Length: 335
Image 1 (tube, rainbow, N blue to C red):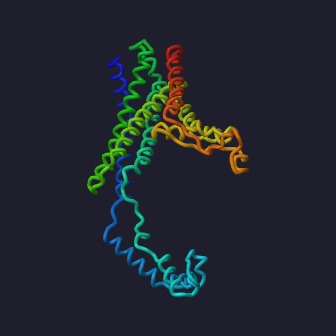
Image 2 (image 1 turned 90 degrees about the horizontal axis):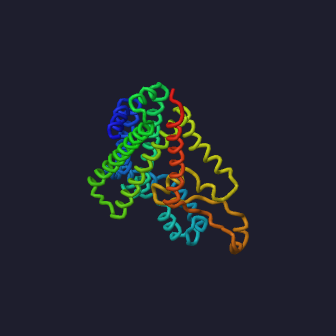
């Protein structure tokens, strides 16, 4: 079995499309880390000087003077508690509406916790790339007719199926782990140069979400491999991916029961990577018609999908796809 897996890994490495997808999966997190470093860079002295000059221009403009006079003439309309046309009203209006330097330096600092969403976006990209890699890998075997030649050397079909599946899973695990390592390594280097230390809780969240994300990428690649092998068509799998992502969301919106969104793909992905996810529920209007909800009626506007509910959601689909694919590979004729 180990020899077969090595052969399949070599075949994966020889596929130029797979190599291109792998390179994109590794270059993208480096670009994202560089973008995070640039967008959270500290404010320079030149930027502070320009912001102060802008504040002075605003203070000396006629439009600002007119605004202060309008505020002083009707301070209640501006939320100022003072008598109209008094020095106190003008002073409060000036203090309330005075432009400040920080208004022109609105750039968020680097925070470790804020970058968990960035890691989620990178994982989403890597997931799509690895699904494409798995699809083109097994799809090429069927489209080129090389599957029959491979089975001449190893007639035990289930061993061949498992070897190909393991090769796809190992590639997805390696690519996603490297992508996260490059992303967090770049962010960590930026934070180190700026003397920003992460809290222990944030580090634990990064590790946990990262491990779950790597598992999700591998499972998604395995699912794409299984569906392509089942239908023996790369085009069908790409169409199925589009239908699952787009059409399922449209259908869930049209369903009449309030908990339809708990079966949404993005909600369950968020629950798996983040540990839990909330979704909006359509509740009856009678929940808001009185001082208190009617007896026995569920009026919660938001529901929660837990980690284990998400695991059952994706696990059932993966087991079904892999089981049908393995059965088909063993039973159906190979052209």
